[in-house]
Image 1 (cartoon, protein in one colour):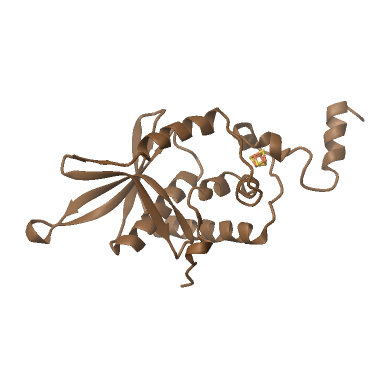
Image 2 (spheres, protein in one colour):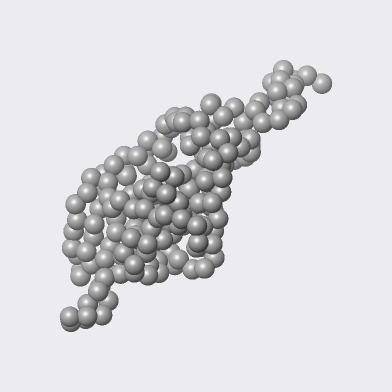
Length: 215
Ligand code: SF4
């Protein structure tokens, strides 16, 4: 398996951007652009709260907040909101299984982005601790619901693929073209992206036709 170097590591959170929209990922991680909207601002407040560090111990489970992560196989580094340490075994043979928990402001998404981000955290923890990490959980603020996520073979494959695609985009130095869709309504970069006029011959013309109602 090829390993990335420390210098080649990319932000783990970029997987979310990639799976939301490859162009958004390029605008942020190739061109260095950023803009906040209500969704991103609320998400930032939520993560800043848990990334403050510290820990807790509840019902036999140790919780560590704001844990730094890194995987050389994925070429990613970042922070987990919470890593729980679940006890296994007993007596002197007692050991702990890391269990990442990620907080999300909204509700569960139909796409894989949250699960891929969480699975990448699990792969980082496996590499860092040498312990298998079979799953984690997503906590959605709007629903106040915790969803268990198993890191099965399909999710691990999707995560490895997304990390490789992220590196390809950044290495190419080229921002992918826009893909106009309902997701653009929630995109904080819509004004910088200009999905109606960027990304191919004829787009400006058809945009102007629509805007001016030309025949
Ligand atoms: S506006 Fe749409 S196409 Fe452009 S970056 Fe955002 S989601 Fe992607």
